[in-house]
Image (tube, rainbow, N blue to C red; front, side):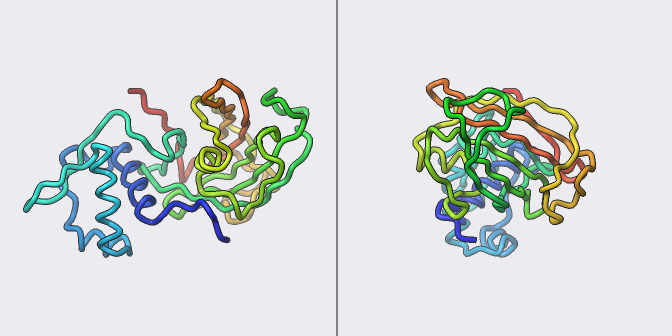
Length: 233
């Protein structure tokens, strides 16, 4: 499925490394493998890797020492596309990707909390992968005030990136509530957990930079694959 806002490969690699560093899978001061070796292990061109490493250096997460190599540098806060995405693989990190299951505009169900100004919302259902492994299913509701129609082909792996680039909306704050719930009947077989099975559960309301609540989401995640992580700085 084509994604008009899919992250470029170098940015995917950069985001993957950011998440690995945050999870402690890349230690502070660790020397990365030689660039050609590292590019080969990732299945990308050396030029693509160098572009990703350049972004890491600009974010302060990498020190490139001439004649010696590339060294990881930890920082407490880093600008990242997935800064508000809290699921990680059990072993840490994992690049998030998403497959859209369905998109529909409809009246907001009565069981949703109050958010937005419109009586209708866009319901987006997705299967989430972490590092290529099925990890979660999501149901996201975007208040219909901000866009008339949504199409699956227009959505990227990061909805927040779509909101920012297309709708000019920034999710600046989110409230998450964690619990356990049963997997919904619409979850695809590829998720791995059957409908009715117990799963980790996240409810989230997101607010924009102007303080408006525009989004509500539910996420069911496979606790044998992923965990919820919030790091306090």
